[in-house]
Image (cartoon, rainbow, N blue to C red; front, side, top):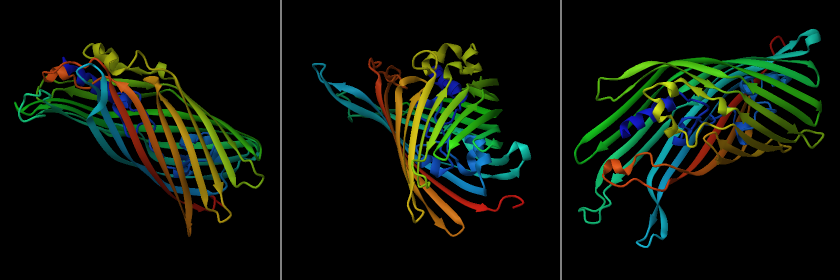
Amino acid sequence: MKRMSLLTIVILAAGAPRDAAGLTFLDLLPGDEALLSDARAAALGRTRTAGHTGAFTAASNPAQLSRSDEMLVMLGGGFQKMKEVRSTPAYDSFDAFLVNSSYALNDKYQYEGGIGISGPLGSGGVLGMFGAGLSYAPVWDFNYDYLEEVRDNNPFTQPRDKLIALNEVRSDGAIEAVTGGVGVAPLEWLAAGVSVQYLWGDSHLFVQTRLVQEDLRGFLDLETSSMSGVRGVVGLSVRPNHRFDFAATWKTETTLEGKFRAGDAEDPNVFNGSFDVKYPNELGFGVVFRPRARVRTTIRAEANWGEWSKYENDLANDPRLAAMWDFLVLDGDLEDVWDFRAGIEHVFYNDFPVRFGFAHKSSPQDKQVVTTSFTFGGGLLFGPLRADAGVEVANRKYRHDDLFDDAFFGGTSRVTQDLVEENATFGYVTLSTTFDPWGG
């Protein structure tokens, strides 16, 4: 039963590749936002709705493409170090709390990158100014590493704390996207745009429990392949005066179709098939404020909403897997969530920018589980190249059930939930250069 539960977790998780980077176990179902390829936006609290995101604007708000006056080529990416600590409370003989005892410590390093190009297409007469953009960047990923040492806590066992088993969860793979979009500004104060994203990818997830003394192993394997789908992005930008920009974006419902193969690697009785996963609508609302007449300071703020209560996964209805669906979801269905982000940039008179930001993001698994991020960064010119850099520090803490029941190894099942602490450090770098517009 334990092994089947683990297999179910892996299979259901594989059908849920929403924006994820530094994937943690809580994010195996809804995912998390991907690392950005635009270091400036990352340093400004990951704000993208109302502000220009360079050559990757087609993926964030295509309406901004019409406001560019130069051709821009960008190459960028991010790397991260994720630290996950799981601990369980320890009590004395009088049932008094002593300390949270850490039993699993996992580190994960990851890199993602992308490339993009954008620029104006000129005037369309009565339709105003046109702009276009094309970019490639990973959108969702499946990277997660978990390793737990199980040791004998019997005080009479010699040697003390003898290693009994190793529990491991590994996941890799990615969903990548090519995004193409156009923007048009029929009026000086109004712009609109639309983008289409073609998504594709695969994944491999692996769960293993190895009993050291008996030299016994239990494997669970899942492979997904040929995952693909199309997503639309619609953007709107309103600039009533030189001090304010107001913007909104809509990312349409998205269905990924794919194939899976799952089972025990030591058992030839594997099963396979096809599955669909539908990701819900997402809305973003943003504002840019320029407090000075001569633009040297820019303030961004935005709020994003995800309709995660509409999330659907065919694997949840598979009779071989449906009984375990609730195991992966903390409390019933996923919830609709908001996240809030803000950033400020000041450009000194030597053209050196300084940027700071903040982000507050809730998990669709539980609105009370919040990730708080602080960001900062800057940029420099190197001849025809511009280099931008950003750093993000994120933290999250929550309670979660033990992934591997101690009763499986001869102990007793835990009554209380584990404390999970996640800390992540992100670095972003973008290189960009500009050219004269097409035909200009």
